[in-house]
Length: 150
Image (cartoon, rainbow, N blue to C red; front, top):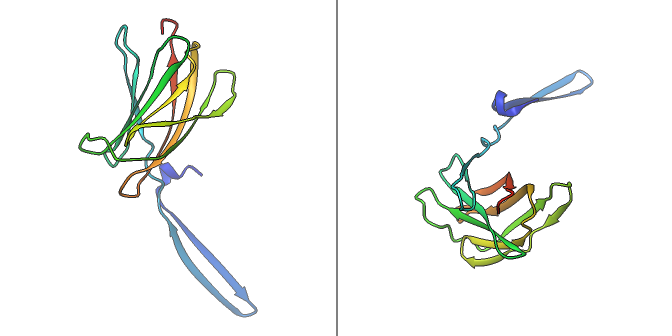
C-alpha cells in the first residue's frame, strides 16, 4: 500500500467473543511528504544540493574538494533561511560499490557539520538525520555525485 498516494488510513479492529462483537475505528495519519532535492551546478565549484521540506526548512550539502581527502558539508536552515542551532546529527554514506559507513561528523558551528570523505569519482548515497529545535525530525537520503573533475 502506497500511503503517500492514499493519504490517511482508516483501521477498524473487530473483536468478537461469543455473541458479542465490538468494532473500534482508528486512523493513521499520512506520512509527511518527501523532501525535494535540487542541485546548483557551476563550473569550477562544488555542486550544492538543497533538500527542502514541507515546513520550509532546508538542508544544504556539498563536497568541498581538498588534496587527498575532501570535506562533506551539511548545513541546516530554518524556514527564514537562518542556520538552525542543531548540535547533533547522524549520517552515513553508501559508496558506489554498496559499502555503508557511518560519518564521523564534526560540528563547525550549530547547524553546520563536516565530515572527511573521499573524492573518488562516483555516486554516493548520503543518509542523514537531526532534530530541529521545534522537535521536527529532519531526515533525508540523497545521491551525491563526485564528478571526474573534482
